[in-house]
Length: 171
Image 1 (tube, rainbow, N blue to C red):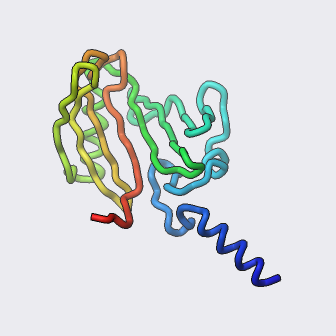
Image 2: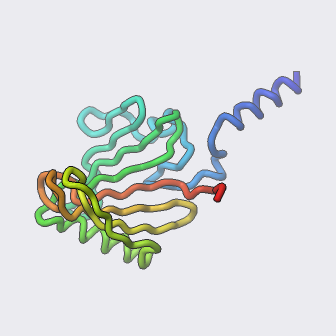
């Protein structure tokens, strides 16, 4: 009986991508490796503000800075959180993207990586900067142009993606 219980506990631990003590905080109270049920306990469905989908949980109208709101997508493709995307709402002349980038730099210091990104006529172009903190990678893209919108009211002028840093790499 004890051996069966140990086997069940071990199988459960191996099926979970990360033990609670090993999880990396991504955004707000969301940690990499959280189950969908854990995410939904933190963010109960709320009409018009929090929406459940098969592969993600959306949180609408999140105030990032005064006058700057975003939509948050907590992605859980395989039943566990792997990525959080924060997509800024459109703003006049991309003012929020500049303010958010400034706030991120003030909090986390100069970015570790900064690069431009070229794209084709259909792809939105932008500048990409990246930080790492406490096992998480933060990748900020500030959209600059593109036929379908850059910095403006029509679409998001920025996007911030949180992922856990790779623990092991085969390179």
